[in-house]
Length: 306
Image (cartoon, rainbow, N blue to C red; front, side):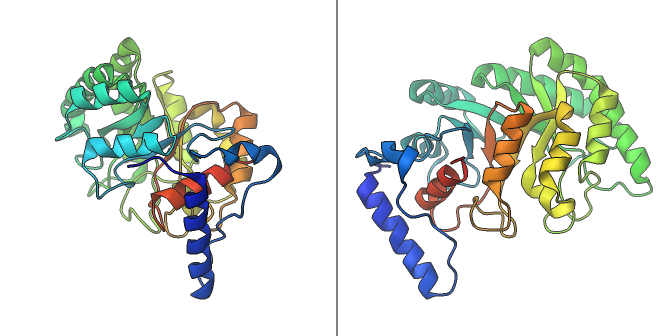
């Protein structure tokens, strides 16, 4: 990917905005920056170099047409200094680590344990232990500090209360492994209205209670604001109520799961609140670029202007 010339970037952005308005689907692509954004007048504008928040590009959802390693390069070309991705399967960890180090890009987090088999079923605890041990080894190669784990889909014959207790028991089992290796496991609640029907863990009250019961500095929440908006809304107040268990933030706008500025969420307000609460770590961009990655990056940049 070539470097972005600001003039060409803005021309393409505004052209896309004009097309959107002409078709009745204006997604509010911002106009030319003013005031504090004078630094954008540089020839090589990099929208990933944001003012208040560090963002990690989810390279499973961005640059999907490119080979995997080229997605890291493309993210860096936009100015982002962090990436995240899903499972480890089929990935050359040594190559990812070498390229990330060369480019000055951090691997913010990856997925250590997915939906299936469910952590919420005790019969899978041995497999979970093995997966977390492998994840700590991978994290050491990648210099990654965090790894997502998922609770699991509904188990036949089990109540939600039982499944949630099984998640607590499973996390207590692997917490010492994560603590010893200094890897934070971040449990991700989903939404069951739009994306993950049949999942056992959604919203914030139950996940917050689970993490408080596990009571480990190595077990916190991957607080995906997109999922939380769909499930419960009231993003800022809910974030404040559960902030002691927040290990990582992810975002996408709603509806559509696209970048900020394409839906109903006022991300400038939400990101400002997170910062005020004391969140000073990376925010994952687990969203699908609506009109291409360059325009998506521009919208992320604008969402961070506060």
